[in-house]
Image 1 (cartoon, rainbow, N blue to C red):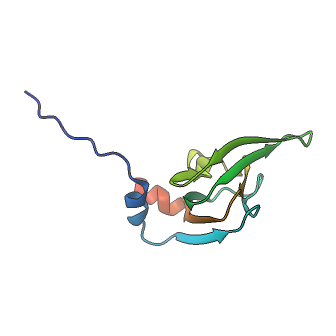
Image 2: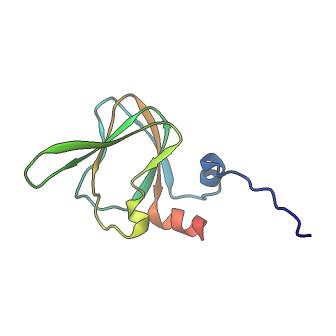
Image 3: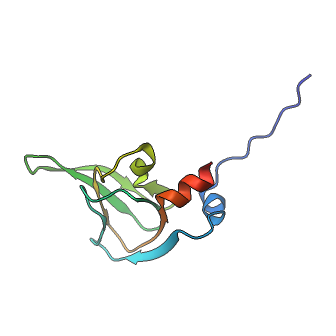
Length: 111
């Protein structure tokens, strides 16, 4: 009979602690932009504290909220799927503590 392996749930804090360099912690005030649509997508952001609003602006200039994220969630991960530019804008809805991890460093740890 095959031995069952206990699955350990993914813990982003443990994962991020394994990254040696390439990360920084920043504080954002309410309404401060974290990253902007159209800018280079070169890092992933991990929300440690606060709420973040993700919006997109159409070519006609209409803005839509596509997500509201909170603690222990990631944003900007499109860069890992090969997006060269940001597809949306992220802005702090409250005071936020956010860890930014460079794309190359997070890919290295994932491998």
